[in-house]
Each structure stands twice: as structure tokens, then as C-alpha cells.
Image 1: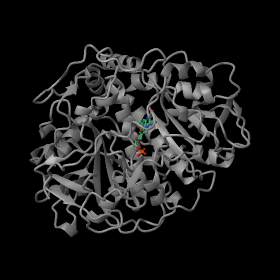
Image 2: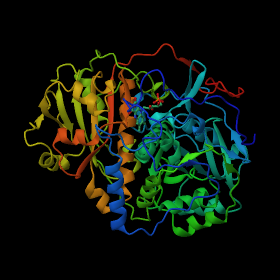
Image 3: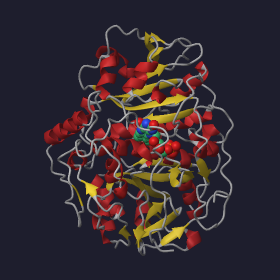
Image 4: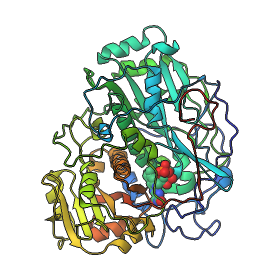
Length: 602
Ligand SMILES: Cc1cc2nc3c(=O)[nH]c(=O)nc-3n(C[C@H](O)[C@H](O)[C@H](O)COP(=O)(O)O)c2cc1C
């Protein structure tokens, strides 16, 4: 099958039923951003500038971050209305590229939920096209279609702010036997559950890579289409794109575990290396729809460690000789030019860097995970709650178990993917947790940060170990009290932050990271996205439901904690509780729109 655009009516996203993004100010046409021109552009944008001086890059990032804070008296600059006529197509297709559809899983892996985190001793599956496809199905594939009053939209295993899905995934595959393929570079298209072939390896091309690493492996690249998010969220969109990357990395890490594989971030690579390997530098992007490289993951059999974790420049540059096939589909007719997004993307471009290796402690998880439902069932059933019942309480053990899973462990997904040390801690609003006082708590995800956090936060905070906390969990009561209204107000007046069992803000060590390496700005959001994905799955596993919240009043949260400077910043919020289902919405199977191949999930 060739990559032609399917005729579909799947736009008009899930908006009208509940306000999903908090109370946005009433839209008065044209009063929000007078400086934005909405026009039709043709041709390529200029590529971003890598030669930006570090000081300038730091200043640019701090400016971006400050400017894109939501405040009680004004939201970050955005379009202020839904320009439905230009809603970006949620799927990337490469026109005229060969598309190889893959069969869907006939039977999900039976592994228990805890196998998402811990690698079992069972034999890793071989690298076959079928197994690679099933890894993608359980991470970046579709999870359902939803339909309401003539509007239909797809949901995916990975969540995304506004369901806009700016994250695209690519594979660099060795020659794999079953399909007689020679290996090459592919784009994963979740709509078809297929791979679009962008480049083909000839002769000994792959052998050199395999010899370099000394083991069988393949790569997964992630990229972001900022326009998909900025169409709805304007300037704040760059933050959301990077949250989504973090969610995707965790999804891939979990799914890899179910195959006996491990994902590892190739942290030495520059963004430009990734562009070369994925063929982005040889692709004609439609204006404003360029894909920005995020990261490249190496996937290996967890029992056979590669001998190195970097790809030398000679191998990277050999990818330039591959001719790329297919043209990216056009996502919108017209675009708004959110210049600051390109500026911050440029300021956070990653150069080549040394490979940091982090070793975590390998203490056991504190609380036994539920055995049923299985890991794959939890992945498939994950959804964002839209409304909570304002009644359901989490038991104290469940609460501790959920928080404990956000602490990195050696040899456990998703945090051993090598995204670096802990920079993010959790300020938790406990609303309904049995046997635990309501109040504001802090989970210090790495003990060494405790003193610094105490110094920076409000002096009156108690910093008492939370009642009943298992020894190793660094959870502290800061202040008793009913924070339900405050939590909702901080989260752009979203009731889901107060009607839940608990909600939280992810507090990142900020300025020091940006000053060390400006591109770490993106990485901070990735870390929060990974934590978010753990929270989503943990909530499901314990019969609750979660929702990521990108919409919150940044400085209101900082004031509450007493953070007076930008040494720490709250980057992402999350809420978990007993969800109410909206029975007016119809759910359809994830691949019902395709002609049946094999498998149960059509
Ligand atoms: C980074 C991020 C930010 C989000 N922000 C909000 C939010 O502020 N409010 C909300 O109701 N949902 C929010 N969501 C949930 C998305 O709307 C949801 O993931 C999307 O509609 C897809 O639905 P699903 O998660 O059920 O697959 C967010 C999700 C992500 C990943």
C-alpha cells in the first residue's frame, strides 16, 4: 500500500462535553494576539540557528518560560479560539513512500503488571518485524476511537495534551528476515499500524553499525511537530510537546520490557545527528510543519548489553548517502507563526555531549503491585479522566505505592532509559487518602535534594515524615489543611485537581539545569512526562484514573510553596481519583477503520 491520505472525518477533537483545559477566557475575535498573522505559507522555513551563544540561549529560554506562564489575570499568548478550518491532521503520512502494514497482536503478552517496571528473567523475544510492530502497538499505537454527535477521534496508548499528538516515531531497523527487507529508516504510522519506508540500507550498511555496538539492536527516534500543539495552545505549546516526548519514552520503555528488551537514550548525540540519521535534513517540510528531532533510543535485548552507547560521527554521516523517499503530508492549509517557539527550539538545540551514566539504587519496590489485570490490559485501558466523583479515596498503601513507582530504580523501566539524574520532585495535595491527613506534602525523589528544597520553600513548612510512610519513601507533610479549592484554582480552575483523591505539581530544579546546558530545558519536561506516564498506569492498576494537567498558574503554585526565585519551577501537574464515565460517548475498537488482517484488535 502506498501512503496516500485516507479520506476520513475524524477531526473536531473531544472538546465540547467537558471543558478539558480549564476555563479559558472568553474569546473576543482578534483581541488576543494582534501580532499573529494567519496566512498561507509555502516552501521551507529557515532551519534553526545552532551557533547561538550559550548566554543568549539561556536568556531566550528564561524569557520563553516566563512569557508562557499562565497567570490568573492572563493566559499565556495563544490563538484564543479554535480555528477548526486549520486543525492539523493528527497523523503524519509520507506520500509516495512504501507503507508496510503489520498484523495486530492476536494475543497480548500475559505478563503481570509489575513486568512493566522489572525485567523478568524470561527469554527476550527475537528482533522480528512482528515483534517490533507489537512493541509499537503497545506504546505508540491507537487504543480506541471515540465518537459523539458525528465527531470521531482516535486515542492512542500514549497520552497527549489536547489529544493533538505532536510526537512522531521513527525506526532504524536492521535487515529482518520475515519480510525480506534490507533494513532502513521507517516512519511508524499508527493510523495504519504500518511502517513507511523512508530509506533502504544497501550491502554492508547495517553490518558496520552492528559491529560497532557488538550486539543486535535497533533504534527508535522521536520528533515533534510543534505546530500540532501551537495550533491550539499558542506559545505554551513547546512545553506540551516536550511533556509528550517524556510520556512517549516511558510508553516505549514499558512496552520494550514486555518483549524482554531495554530502551536506552543515546544521550551523546546532537539533534543534528538525529536529523541526518532520520533523513530530516533531506526532507522538504511544509512551512511551519517541520519536525524537530527529540531523541534517539537504542533498543537491545536486555540480556546482551551493547559495548558502547554512542554512534561515532562517521557512522552518523554515512546516513547522508541514503536517499529518502516520500513527502510529508500537509497538516493545515494556514498557520499562525508563533515565532517564540522557533526561538526556544533553537535555544534548546542539543549539541554533542559526553555520555553521562547514572546508576540508581536497586532497592525493591516498597509495595507489591497488583497481579491482575495484566500489564498489556493496563496499557490498553489507560485514559485521561475528564471528571472525578469527588468521593473516591485512595487507600494509604495505594497512595504510597503510586508515589514509590516514580522513584528511579536500577534495572527498572522507565527511568533506567538513561535520561539523566533526578531533577523533579512532587508537591502533593492530599484530598482523600484514608488514614492520612489532608494537606500539602512533598515527595523528594532523591534524598540529596531534601536540604535544598527545605531552604527554598516556605520556612513555616513542617517537613514531618508523612504518617505511616514506608522507611525509604521520602514523603514529608509540609502543612495540614484542605487544599481542594486551592489545587483546582492553581490548575486553571479545573475541578479535576480538587475532586480527585490527590493531585500534584512537579517541581523541577530549574535555573541551575538551564545554566549548565540550555538543552536541559527540554529534558526537564521529558522527566515530568515520564513521571506522568507512571502515574497514569499506576492509577489504572489500582482501579483509579489519572489526568495530566499542562494548564496551571505557574507562579500561584510557586507562591504557595514559597519559591521566590526560579531555582525551582513547577512544570507539570497531575491528578488521580475515582473517574466518572461519560456514557454519551461511544467507544470503537482501535483498528476498526482498517480492512481486517489478523488479530483481535481490529
Ligand atoms: C502534557 C499533557 C497535558 C495535559 N493537560 C491537560 C489539562 O490541563 N486538562 C485536562 O483535562 N487534560 C489534560 N491532558 C489530558 C489530554 O487531554 C489527554 O491525554 C488527551 O485528550 C488524550 O486522551 P487520553 O489520555 O484518554 O488518551 C493532558 C495530557 C498531557 C499528556
